Image (cartoon, rainbow, N blue to C red; front, side, top):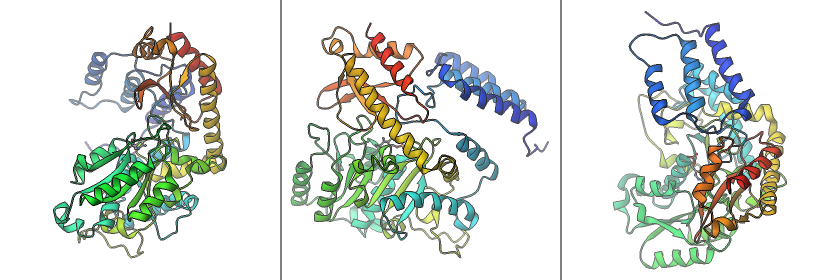
Length: 466
Ligand SMILES: *Cc1c(COP(=O)(O)O)cnc(C)c1O
């Protein structure tokens, strides 16, 4: 039997019930899984029986119930977690449209409208960076892919023979520089580009946890003297664990001096560029050669929405060039996705971002970001008033904290976290803070988190101390 293409009204009704039912009462909903792994596994098996066809509305309800009870809920207003966020209605609807049209975005000529929507949306951020139309921008699956794209562009720019001869065509070992607390995707990138994980130079951080630029300069000179081949420095704009912004202007100057590619990993915090009151914190970001900026973090778009920007197009085009004669021609002369990015067949990532931006407006984003800055300050203030110690120094709304009773050994940090998660009211995590501290980590990133949610978090933290 040939299945129907068109969802029925019963399908839509089931979907609407699940979407509205979950979202309208989300702050009453547990933020963490309420079922055990065994219960989840057994329910998955009984729901997805592939032996005979099942009714779609039933599957919609059962799948939603599984996810409701078996996940940490990143859209929860008291999800103080890993920069994940909540989708706004525009994005939920956009993803349904994308699944309906399922455009093929490998080739420009197959999905002209989709590409033009994406280019138009990405242009907003290139303009904020002051980067010319002659630069490059694309959506990616996320920050890890964007960072890899930046590294490949940087290697291609620095080593013209890398494309054909690979690493063995070089006269020495390529190396690049990140701060000791940079994102660990760079370990995988070193592995996957063939330069090897030992090629990642982890530069010590200063007392404020920022990359120590004097140490960076010293290491570059030492590497050059040892016939290694430095090609890139990564400045992090908002480290994952502690929200630290490396000294971007100083790193940019060193890159200039030594002829190195400057990549900024702003996966989460690059979004502060949308706030006229806070964008100064990112000064120097505009001097980057390439930038990672996730729409699925602070821009509150659903996952699978990374963005990559490069000031020059040529190294990106050379980094991903390929001549596939079976692909359709591109008479418009526009950027051809499959020859400028890692992915080939690719989802229409940009619609959810463009639709969210258009319904909220850039002022709406600025307001949300400023509110989160305020809530980060509120969290620090309330914690300190209750005797907690703040371990990281940042203006960004991510807080590492501990308590004298934890430090004295009276209460175990892991026990405090477990008590917090057992309340099912919130999600947060534990993070190390160099050189040798450990603390709870809470980040405000969900668009409709209220001050009262932050207050509740502090009450829960106090109660978890016992
Ligand atoms: C989250 C994060 C990444 C990884 O991005 P994904 O979108 O998860 O792939 C990279 N760098 C930093 C600083 C991050 O916070």
